[in-house]
Length: 422
Image (tube, rainbow, N blue to C red; front, side):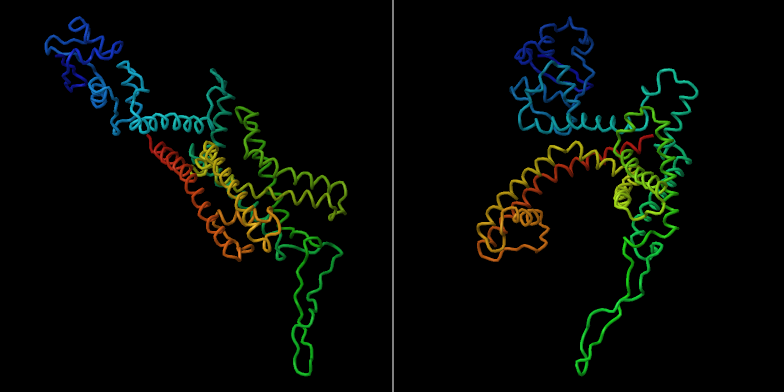
């Protein structure tokens, strides 16, 4: 009989039991006995300063030829114990493998998450091993620009940047409303227009209504105040972009980031429009100028700049990026269902659906349970197909979306716990 002390907990077994797994540490221990350095002559036992909770599963493996793990112990601890005792993790029984692999995979996934976010602001390699005073200054300025939590000044700057983003988006939205537009020079907009006969009174007298006119976009331009605010925002974002690219440790990495690409796309229409107006100041209605100004719609994407400082938004973007397989699987399922049900509904409801592509829209909004109601089946067979379409859509979404939601929940909980570290 052999006594083994694992972290203060004694286990007793027979030498013959340990010899059942030749080549493992315990099998070698059974043959060495008192000559091993772990032998304690005072207590007549072998002592190992290892995790006592994981050892019962290992000893049980020698006794029963089945390796079952404790679900209350982290899989990474079990992996370390298996490696120490010379056992292969592939010997774990299928009933315990899922829990073990989940712990192990979570560690790798969360480590990748930490690497992803830790490298967004500071990259020690980018500043060099022996940075100069100017390099140290650039590093401080980069952290100031990118991390609002680094100082009060950085937080104030982030709030100022968010304020200009809101102003920019607000100007873009409001300048399309007639209250914030003025007629172009030489364009006269009458106050009212006499509408056709609204209703007839006694003796068939036609009672006409005067309808207030609204300025058209083609015959008007934004109010000067809106234009000045637009220029102010463009100047701020231009200065901000140039400052950030100057202090960026890796210029190419900075230029490839989506938010920085959005900044460039938002600023380009301003400078192109200014150039066109400087070439021909009198021409304010050319198709080229209108096209350039219409391209300013990308300005609404600046809303993402508001979210980049929020952990939940960054976690959401990261979750979508790492869950592409699950999302692609959902798209494939949806496309397959849309194709099948659109084809079936075309032959069942020939009068309502003149082609299979016309049924794609109905199948898509039905499977996603949106149901606009512009296309609806009207026969008993159509009702059956519609019901099956809804059920398949619900199952498709129910099977795939929770995977993405679970990933987001795990990442967000981990990110929140990291922020509470001292």
